[in-house]
Amino acid sequence: MMKRLKWEYLVSHTEEELAQLGQEGWELVSVVPAANGTDRFYYKRPAPTVSESITLEQRSRVMQEGRKA
Image (tube, rainbow, N blue to C red):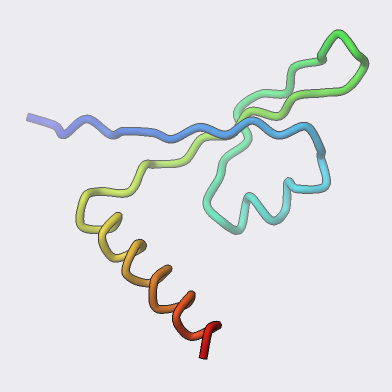
């Protein structure tokens, strides 16, 4: 049986973020014009697994502690 992939989603209002978000693993899936004349950019990327989430939390904690020192 194939494991179902989970996704996380992000909505942005500026095209300037496109390159940075791409480097962070986000994939642009849609651009929708908003009523006020701006665009909405919809992104998705695979959600981290439980073990990846724990590692990301630990890394974030270590980075924050390093900034305090």
